[in-house]
Structure formats: C-alpha cells, structure tokens
Image (cartoon, rainbow, N blue to C red; front, side, top):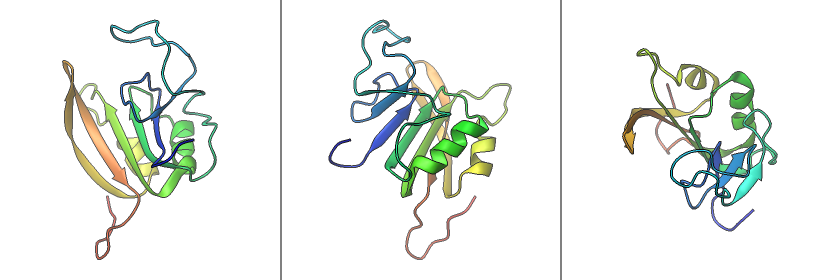
Amino acid sequence: MCDGPTILDIGGEGRHPEAWNLNPRQYKTFGPERGELIPRWIEGRGERIPLPDGSVEVLIVERTPLVPATLAEIARVASPAARIILRHVPVHHLDPHRLAVQFLEGKIERGTITIGSHTLQETVISRAEEPGSAAGK
C-alpha cells in the first residue's frame, strides 16, 4: 500500500492522516467534515478486511464494535509485531475491550485518552515481545 509501516483505521474517516481508512462508506459521517470524501479510503468492514494476512503493523479501532468476527480479522491481518490500539467509550462502567483482551494476544497497556469532549478507554495490545520481557495480560 505504501512505504513505511502500514496503519489501518478500522471504521476510520481520516482523523489519522497516515492511516488507511477501512469503511463501508466513502463519505465522512461524523464531525464538521460530514459528507466529504474519506482520504486513503479502503472499502470494507471490520468483519471482512480486504488485506493479506499479517500485512498491518498498526491497527486503530475507535467506535467500531469489537464483535468476534472483527477480532478474528484483526488477528489475521496484524503482523507478528503489530500494535493494536482500541479506543471506546465505557458504557455503564463495563470494559469495552474485555472480549478483545481475551481474544488478542500480546502485552496489554490500559489507560484513558480524551478526544474532543470525549474521554475514551484506551487499550493497546503489542504483539511483539520486548527482549527479556514476557508478554502478558
């Protein structure tokens, strides 16, 4: 797709300029740029990512539901050293990344991030182990 690491934003609409944006729609549906073309657009859905196995170094998932079919596709396209960045609003104090942490292997880092006026739970899953450390949950 391009030189450098392949970055895929599942459900993306162009917020990350370096990322390819996987989205079933070609036009933005969110924010002040609603109706504009999504840059670096790849037609598709999280449940069926049209990329080869192990081809993505960074996956970003914000607002896209983390259903089992999407998690299976993330695991399939993620490279052995991939970073998977999940950002979702916790609902009723429930962990929105519980299923992803059970399904995807790697070192887990958790925190919060504020985007605009929204505070999101952020979970980063690093598939590559650092020398001398153990990946774990």
